[in-house]
Image (cartoon, rainbow, N blue to C red; front, top):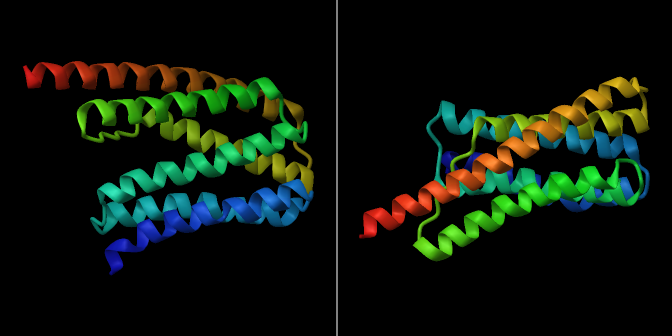
Length: 184
């Protein structure tokens, strides 16, 4: 039972999507900030528990990044719709994740196997996205951060988004070629 704790934490993060989106839409910045902070901490906690106690699983390897993507994409879309963050930035982040998910689904359909290997740059990108969202929510709720911080984060996120998206495309192509070679 204990080995399921990381997966339960990931599911909890997915369940946070609806209240977080509602709170952001209603401009309840303080509570939204706290829930996103809780989600960010839970993201680190589930990975720590899985690695430390060897509670890794295929389900967890899928749930953890899925929880991150669902929550962050939903937050980005709502913040973009509210005009808080630039539309082009939302589109870039959403397209990268759509490419990753489409590549995974296409690979799985073509090969009947699911290979998910989270790249370090993708983990860095997720961490930067979480920091960006937390700083924005904090900025709206209680503290004012200099615009320079957001501009630096945007540049870092754009770079890690483009590089990680490209690397995932290369990775899927490599996996598919290797799969085809192994079948011949």
